[in-house]
Image 1 (spheres, rainbow, N blue to C red):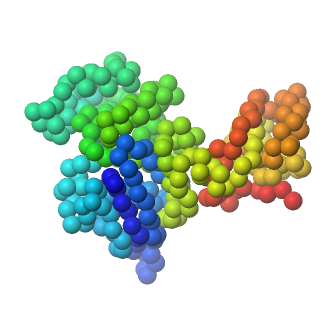
Image 2 (image 1 turned 120 degrees about the vertical axis):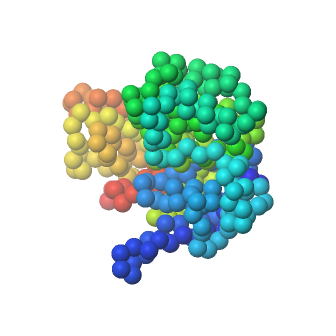
Image 3 (image 1 turned 180 degrees about the horizontal axis):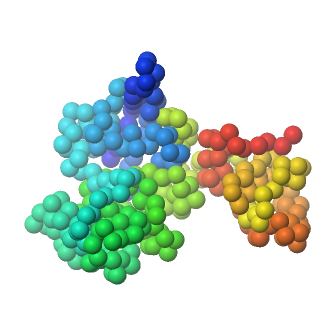
Amino acid sequence: MVLEINGVTKVFKGKGKSKLIANDNISLTMKEGEIVGLLGQNGAGKTTLVNQIVGLVTPDQGEIRLFGKSVTDDRVYARSICSVQPQSQVPLGFLTPRQAVSIIGKMRAGKNYNPKRLDMLFEALDMGKWADKEGEKLSGGARRLTAFCMAVIAPGKLVILDEPTNDVDPVRRRYLWDVIRNLTDNGTSVILVTHNVLEAEKAVDRVAIINQGKILTQGTPSEVKRSVSNQMRIELNLLEKMEERYIPEWAISYHQSGSRLIIKMNTENVTNAVAWAGEQVELGTVMDYSLTPTTIEDAYIELTSNKVVVSS
């Protein structure tokens, strides 16, 4: 087993006598070559858990083992086998992406450093035009991709990516997921920390949904979806906000965020849903819509959000 987390709890002191429970009795395991997604809102406890895995923070209770060895007993070992892309942007200063990635590669791999891997990563992520540009002049997305390359230029046995797609444009996000998946071909395991549920569903082998320091559910994407419901959903791109009174009676629940409206229904109401959505397009309230089975996003919303409204 690559990673074993058993009953980990971490509490931070707040103002006065208040306490913040960042992780609450978390247990999780991970096999070689797996991509495991930690999904949760900002402040859910994801980054705190990651910091404990690499030995930067010590659990108040519980134990973390990497390849059978206790992280608490040997923090240097933990850091030697983990490669991390932090959530915060890496300050590059006047270094170019090529220089920054090359330095990290030589530090981690030593004599085994292969500069051809740098070229392969930059080509796979279409970073050629930024490769020799000073870090201070790079966009947020380019710096994010550079930080990713720094984490995987000489990957450890466990790669931890904390919000790797932040600020990255849609095209290069696709390239990024391909590179992440290719990491596992050689047995590398990946922890993907993100709140981007839609992207994560396509990339991970297993997923754990974290909220307020607790793991609410975990398993394969299919298992997580089945744990909530086996319904259908229709997603609409709105041209104007839809009031609650216009939500159809057959809707089991709905979630509206900005211009997106997601409605869940039983399968027998699919025909009604398509007809209703078509009418909304003709009325000019909806730009377009799509009908799909329940997604991890539905499970995530239902488990973590108070914004789900159940029809009476």
